[in-house]
Length: 389
Ligand SMILES: Cc1cc2nc3c(=O)[nH]c(=O)nc-3n(C[C@H](O)[C@H](O)[C@H](O)COP(=O)(O)O)c2cc1C
Image (cartoon, rainbow, N blue to C red; front, side, top):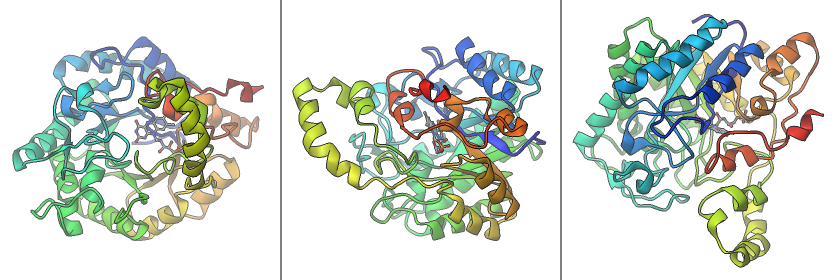
């Protein structure tokens, strides 16, 4: 895959699909803005590979049935017509969703609820694991048939595949748990099944975490080992590095703690009685805020540099990429091959063009994090449009 530049739109759940998970005209318009704005590649928000893996967030895109291919194809055609490139991110949400949204029991390596969703998942049987492996391969086939330029397997952020990789959520004693080789097994098998399905020339990427904040959670050293294991499968063409999980708080998206947005838009908090909200704001939020990591530009770059030493696959780094100087230096110094962004592009889809013409040296996004929490109950948008003026 040849890109026009090294700036990528990182997957960001849009909440713009219809009730069945088909991409809509609004979604097409939204994506078109990134291409017209000069970005080298769009990675879509996550698309569900099967109903049991459906997100609890507002209106997830789905890719779990052949009947959805024509809607995806229409989207891809529109991006290709204007010279853009687009990769579909495929995901299973695992224990980071609710069964009332999936209509099926939650799937996870072990019966440990996610600290945010608080619903006990089913410990997956051998048959469940096989179904998920096939589900990823089938989703990749559909993506290829729809014309996407590649797929990205979501192995980050606490979703199903990450929950297998992490000792915090995977307590299995069989061949899918325990040693790192065993915890990696499902990811390796999915990469192989996807590769077999789409052929050797079709781009297959994976998104992984540099770390998670949790007891026994993934550490940077383990991330580096995992990226080597990905490379050894010989079934992957690129690795994107992010961090954090839902129960870990604002680790993935560092910046401000969006108190008001949480109580306005995010379940279950937005449904609480006003008095409970007041009490929580007064007595609980101040403590929660203290443990949130602070924002620093390019917060996954340090681990990315170590990954670059360990593998020869192209590395994409996301997380706090804001100024042109930091991005250029990260690429020139060999810490990463590409940079990707989520929050900044919601406000400025034309950031790449602005960098190119010199109209901007730094993204205007102030990391308020309202966009992240609001996608629980409404479509994606920036809540700080005034920053543009
Ligand atoms: C609104 C929103 C939705 C997101 N949805 C996804 C997603 O669907 N898949 C994914 O891998 N990451 C998702 N992310 C995480 C981003 O891809 C990225 O890893 C993270 O926001 C850090 O990058 P940033 O500092 O450029 O925002 C989302 C982030 C935001 C802000």
